[in-house]
Image (cartoon, rainbow, N blue to C red; front, top):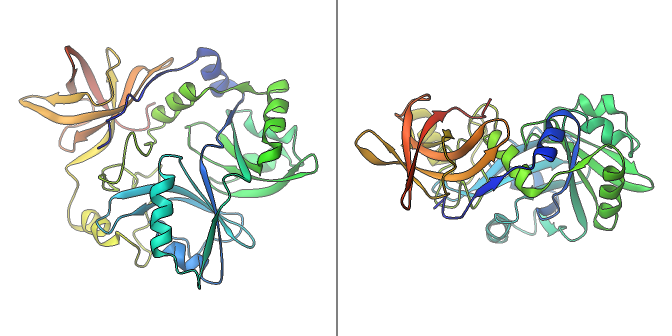
Length: 338
């Protein structure tokens, strides 16, 4: 279940401030990148993912999830429609489960997929000056990048090297992921660090992710988590279409949305002391009112956490978080943190 790992991080002040006021660069090549081709690639993906792939045109994309038949999260993915194929990526932890699902359900006569993780690198540039930082090295105008909708993308070059630049909301600040041949990734990072961008360490990136209320597969959700428990239907997340046709897990998702509810949902906690991942959330007489997942010491918000909390507990309620011989009061907060 989520919350089984350590999940506790502390942000670097320098990197955090740069992400809020300038630009930072991070190597995200640990993510799994898959390329889908074939005459029915679009139809196949539409039948496997929670968001609507059918209307996507080249240059646009979605955030979505792949679910079990019971509506639980196998992987959360980002999907980018390109001229001749679809680029789909997910976190390293979710990769094996997604690949197993695809091998089971994708008919190779209709669609094919290949793992391009070793061939393509992913470099993230985040912060209010991210567009300018990328434009300083690539053949693209910063104003064009700044106008891209989320998950939309375009083609450019870094020197003579072709690349895809996608707008992404993953860390809650202006951000772009650059998909570039793996052989050129280190040179792009070095050029960014020599120019406008500060290096973004993994711990600070995780703090930004937690502030943005974005669940991480394996820490905040897994194959035992319903899509709506992980708040993948939240308006600012937008991973689920309730208008599209059938897909794996849709029956459960639709039943929850139209006729029922989940008993717990991913929320924020503002804590006095940073708790451990896996700590229990108590409220009133209920000592098992929730479970803590990711936690961080944020330079802006202090000790914060993502936690599954009973749906009837309102935002602003004060709960007690307990782990080992420790406890701390915490205030339930909507996501993202502001």
